[in-house]
Length: 423
Ligand SMILES: *Cc1c(COP(=O)(O)O)cnc(C)c1O
Image (cartoon, rainbow, N blue to C red; front, top):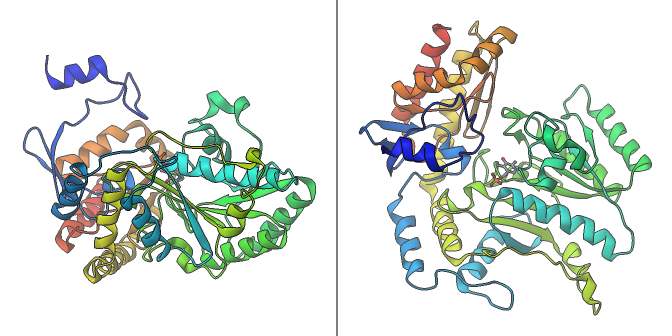
């Protein structure tokens, strides 16, 4: 049996149509911003492997650090035990997180980081004997595939089978200069009519929704309002963290800082699964008690896995190098000039750009339809030109690893333009 046949025989792939999906590409090696497939074809990883990779594949420095950790302490349970990689990582993350963050809770992916945040908020109010259960979320939100994450996420085809099992959430539109007063009014109204416990949002960029973007100043106003209304704020930075928006965290653009933050994807540089939920001291304090029922009863077998923490530490070393920020700025500048050149293209409705994220939204329902029908052939179009992209509906987007060169990106921009020209 060929590898492809065995794959079909034994494996169920994520987000994959079982009937119409094309045969998956067989990747044999990673090298910087490129994959090499089993035919020797080189592919530029234009979406950083689902937004996780920061410094390129098989980075010699991270690989070395991970390998050293594997021969020192590969894993240990984290209740009643601790280890240097977890402590060091928490200490070093604190130096980058907003000043109000004071404790790190580890888990193992973005969905669990969100799940932990939601539970932390609900039990916070429970422990204070002021039970509140409603979350305010943004329209179009995506916060992961577990039940809590699906509940606060937009209801759509991805979770419709589970609709009646998800908890109720109230939603507000993305704020902009036209609707901000109305959105604030709606927020306050929900606080009067519902027992609002928390407000969760993807700061500045809603990734899975199609890289929808909004301004920091309006989010600032909402966070300020939440604080006035005694509502705990959760910034889901699973996608936006670690330089993606041009600063270390998207909340670095804000004046008012969230009470809780969720990190994952780029945390380990895209090497290993790891999640972090950080919180302000006042939240932690609500769990300190002689009463044992106030304990936060949550934990995963692989909590704070030392090998994953060592990958995160090595990735942080690279994030703290000046050269990385120079590349981030160069990618941002490249995206901007691509944005300017595509803005007036007849097939383009809007080009959005923030930091290292570039999104090209194509025009009209028929093209949406075209794209939906031909999503595979679009991927194929780019794969033939040595680029790995996966459009979200009618939105083509690029989130490259920071090690991508100017020439890599020029090739991507040029190929996107050619693709649009032949539509
Ligand atoms: C990807 C993502 C998640 C879920 O992370 P997983 O590691 O895939 O579970 C949650 N929130 C946001 C904003 C994401 O982009």
